[in-house]
Length: 497
Image (cartoon, rainbow, N blue to C red; front, side, top):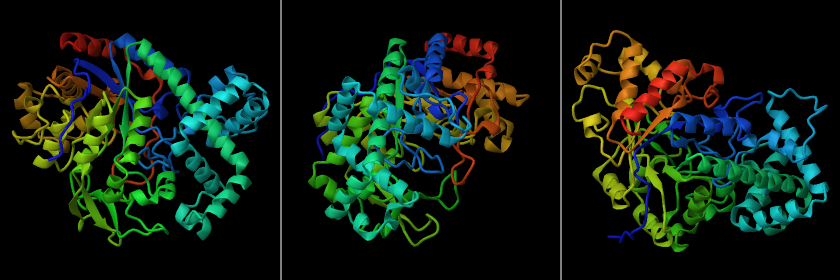
């Protein structure tokens, strides 16, 4: 049995927070960013008594916009960079661009103009600062910058479709690419430097307002990512990108055939031989960005659902145990503070629960999963624990109002008996769910922004198992209902959040 070192975990102070991805913030551009509206959102949370801002992974995404399949496990998404910030620094003139502000190409063009001005402005202090940033993040930044430059050169093709010499990372081919693509590489360096600079400032502002930033770390990384291309030994994949098995989950409430994610599985034997360096680097980056981090699909640190690559569904997969306990123990030995939270939803076994408890990690309870009529359902309020996080729903669920409107989602007679109330309409059911969440014994209650705004299914963030139309939702400030927000604030005071 691996010895578990003692270290501090997540602060269990009773509080509440809001789940909102930065892309969902208001604004004139293609998506929300970490500029003025993010600061306004922090002020809003503070004014309403919330203490936590939770978001989805913030890495650069593929064209489907899924934050759970990023191009890097370290890099920040350049589409989140504030153009106003660049303008304030004097590095951006947005006149005569000839591109609509709501077009994604607009932000890319602005970032290119800003980089050109930055590198030619002659401000030595900023250039030295960028060089220091590049040196500090050398373990991921150089490979990522080259990877993105090569993707641009090869029309965004996946790395396994690149020419053999580059695909195989032959040293002469890489050196030639670095020389040929120097301008594109410098652009990526600039974007990452600016992203992390802006994030640091926003994080400081949140801290000053008593708001913790709560991040999300996908357990797997995307096949088409700088991580897999540059550090292939960490994955069960050959030099050409071929895999015998891929990651996913078995059939569950979201899908009768399971979910075939397609991510490469880890080569845990190689990771052990490096004393889990890849994981150490990954967590180090996340904890620079966030005050606490959720490990998405935590059960994958106990066992992974291994699916034959040739299969079209996840049905024929099998659970394969992995040394996640050993990896976490290694991390804890070297860290005084690891504020991690386990996303322990889905097929959870005693072994997964033991792993979570061994490191004193908070787990999750979701009220939308609770009311199926089974009195042993672990998501029911009377089964929740003070060390849990409670959610009305997550980014993968319907909005709570949408859930209430469709009575096929829950056992209404059971819910009414549980509440001791007659529910005459969806509005009453919705209000009851909010009260249940805020009154829970769980130390942290997280409400999706859609639930603060009482929005229906049209505002859903993601529908698992579907392609297209996800990750696009945004809110507008005029959607706020002051009476409803006052009521929620009153409940937070009543239940000591």
